[in-house]
Amino acid sequence: MSAFPSRLAIYAGPKAVQNESKEIFKWPVVTAEDEAAVLEVLRRGGMSDTDVTQQFEKEFAAWQGVKYALGCNTGTAALHCAMFGCKIGVGDEIICPSITYWASALPCFSLGATVVFADIDPNTLCIDPSDIEHRITERTKAIIVVHYLGHPAEMEPILDIAARHNLKVIEDVSHAQGGLYKGKKVGTFGDVAAMSLMSGKSFAIGEAGILATNDLEIYERGIAFGHYSRFGEQIQTESLKPYIRLPLGGFKYRMHQLSSAMGRVQLKYYDQRCEEIRRAMNYFWDLLENVPGIKAHRTHRDSGSNMGGWYAARGIYLPEELGGLSIHRFVEAVRAEGTECSPGANKPLHLHPLLNTCDIYGHGKPTRIANSTRDLRQPYGSLPISEKIGTLTYSIPWFKKYLPDIIEQHAHAYRKVAENYKELLKDDPGNPPDLGGWHFYRQG
Ligand SMILES: *Cc1c(COP(=O)(O)O)cnc(C)c1O
Image (cartoon, rainbow, N blue to C red; front, side):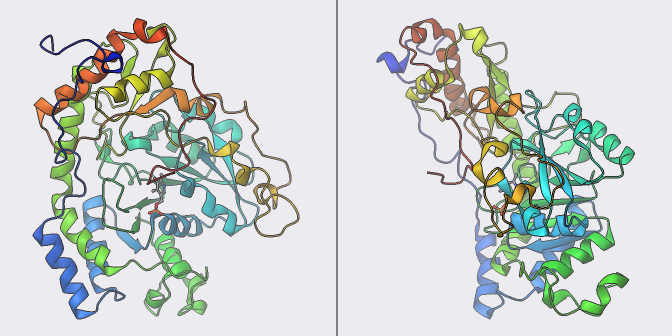
């Protein structure tokens, strides 16, 4: 790395990243095979059928390693079906990390249920297993686990808590499709997994989502809730049989077949493409090992766990190793070097007004506590790690290809800034109060 220039670009030095590469970031990879599959459906007018989707479900379930998969039009819909599948209903509580995309939690409101947020672990950025148990009440029905930014959550202690308290576990795998926890695929640990397959995710096939489970009743309740055209005589769950043909939820959640056609093709190459992503991302982090202020957000090498498709890659910021340099100034300097970097991730959900004051359904009180016997809202100060997410993390480039020369330039941008932090302290304006966003996709 010594061949690289060291004067910071923010002080008129040469940029660390000299070669732009669109190729390394391009995603999803769309080939003539995807195009042919989509065109076949389009030309025969099969967009609203379910034949291709049911093929995709079979292949997806086999790949995931579960008995049943149910294709939905969004990840949000798949999570909604999973919650209904687990019989989450009026007055029930779910426990969910505050740092996640809103759809991990919010669909519970329309079921008459509510959410209690748990804090995250500052290293994994996933739900902190030691912050769950004291939040369980006689109304708690399920724990929502999010494998956040590709990092698998600590499933062993979570499953142990769930078993002891007879709770369902719903895995939101929207950030980690195909990832491993201790050698086993994420999405196969809980009672049901639900995930987004929308264009911004690592498994990206348009607007789509999928539910995966070994539990026939959860699967059939998912069908009954939002898939009326498939809710017929073949249903085996007795309690559902009287209601076939109409959707119990009053929702229509069918997957668009232009997406499932693309999904069948993407699935064939997904593992191999993710392997290249992990090779590239691990190389980036290896280059930054032991650089002060910067810590990888990744699994340990010999743990049998991995980062899946490394969705929305981020690093952990350690300002105490950089004389207290603000993350704001840090990312400004990194960006000046010609690479991706912005502070924060999803903002803590427990602080948003929707979770505190909004009366969505006209209950005459906030929906969060509309069916509760206690005020379970969580004010500022109640989830300290989640509340610091804006200064704890920053985005890093999400490489899709192993191109060492390009990756080295981006890593050098980070190293250069960390090594020259003292210069940056001189004109550090400090952090603004608000960092990060409510969602990542083309957000304003
Ligand atoms: C994207 C996402 C969802 C929702 O998926 P959509 O397909 O956008 O509805 C749910 N949970 C998490 C964690 C997500 O990132």
